[in-house]
Every structure is written in C-alpha cells, then in structure tokens.
Image: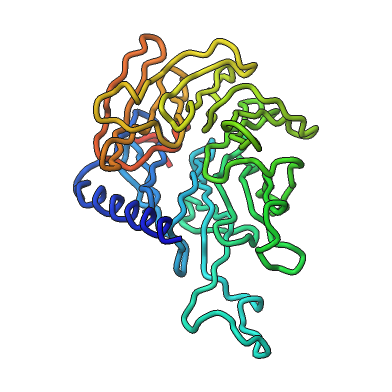
Length: 341
C-alpha cells in the first residue's frame, strides 16, 4: 500500500512539474480545420482548435485524483467523455451507529460516474453510479450516440467488495441513459484505449489473460462474439477501418496491423530512441489516415508529442513537455475559423 502511495505521489509531482514547464502563453499543438483533445496525467482536459485553446472546466464539486483513465472526443467534436471520481453523498455512505468501527471523521467517500462535457453548452452531464475508480476509459461510437467503457459495478447490496465478477464493458446510450452490459468482458483493462470500428460493427479492447501477456480482442456489437487478433494493448482503429494501431508489451513500441491480425508494421520503437521510455496511451489517427500522433514518454516522466508519416515512416517531434493527446477530429465547414454562425 505504501509503495502505491509513493507511485501516485511521484506521478502527481511529475504532472505539476510538467505544467510549470508549460508556459501560460504556450499553445497546444494544432492542425488546420481540426480539433484535438489533450489531458495532463492528473490535470485538466484541454482542446486545441485553430481559433484557440479551450481549457475544459471540471464538474461542480471535488473530483478525485490518483487514477487516470483515457478520455474520448466525439466524432463531431462537440462532446468529451471521461470517467470521473466524485464525492459520494448517498445514504450508503452514512455511518451505522450500531457498527463499532466505521469511516473515520472527515473521510470522503467516493463514487465514479461517466462524465460527458458539452463544449458548446459548457456543461457536464453524468451517468451511472459505480465503485470508486469504477468508470474506466471511454470511446464514442462512430455516430457519437453511444459510449463504450470499462466499469466496476456495485453489487446488489450497493457495496464494492464483491470483487472481480462486477467488472464489465458497458455501452451507454446517450439518448436514453441506459447501459448495455457486454458479456464475458471482465478482462478488459480499465485504463487502456478502447476503439470502435468506423462502421460501428466491432469494438477493439485490451484484455488481460489469466496467464500470459495482454491481448487485442475484437468484440462484435450485438452478437458479442470475441476474437483475439494480437498480443499487445491500447488498440486504435484507423478512420477508414483498414488498420488498427496498438502498443507492444509494456508500450515499448507502436505497431499497426490489419483488423484480421495480419500485415503488422512497426511505427515507432521507443526502446531504441535515446531518452525515451515507452509509447503511452495509444495512437491518435489523423482524419485523413496519413499521420499518427504518439505520446512518447521520456526519462523523468515528461511527454513529447511525436508524429509518424504513414507514407514515408518519418518520425518527427511536434511538441515537447506537452500534455498527452487523445483525439483528433475534422471540423465541419460551419465550425471552421471564419465561418458564418
């Protein structure tokens, strides 16, 4: 327990250090007619646009830290989804006077929700009621109407100590607020990338095996049939659907392969680059499928934003000591700078 506390403290200090190095007048990396989603390890969400950067405010009330999950940018660039840990003020957190030992005075009880932020309306909506740190990394469906995410659900008695069987991939329908539980998905990694195929027929996840390394698994939407296609993690489907980018073991390298698991190619070997530790949090595809952005973590925990040209294989550092990038969408013509409102 002490070791975990020290690890979390170190990551928080590194995040604060990175934000200090990041000057107030510095702009995020941006691309023409595009919107990109960034996040600090334990800090704010940020969005870059040609017209300027947007600092996304947190929801009202204290937000728990210490566990980062991957946020998602909707295909239309209008919504952001992320698992949030909030203070729990429900009846279940009240101390039973008949219990000799209960929560210490001043101890904050926590709960998790799936948070969805509207960039246009500048407001949050929250969905669900999960165990602390129970709403994992998020991914929007291609039509922007659903969100897939890993979760740790409460048992019938509302507690969170029933264990592994409560973990599952959930799909949230934003219109109805209802959840669909995907069967046989207890192994989905909570803080790894999740990605829908462009046609919406499959979801790619990183799944833990009982023995051996983690693997990339494709889940067919509706039938929920599963197929393992490679060893690795953090899958990211290309915009045209012909490639899936993924990390090798421990994020040492970034690769691409076809959805059937064939044709694998190296994008970036972080282990062979001076000063680099690994490739962190998966790949972000450009809308035209010509470029991939990667978060390359350096010694000391700093992040460099690296681009890979898919035609030439050329690797270029595009931003240093930066927050990590998690999404890239093409702005509609009426959203572009200079467009009439």
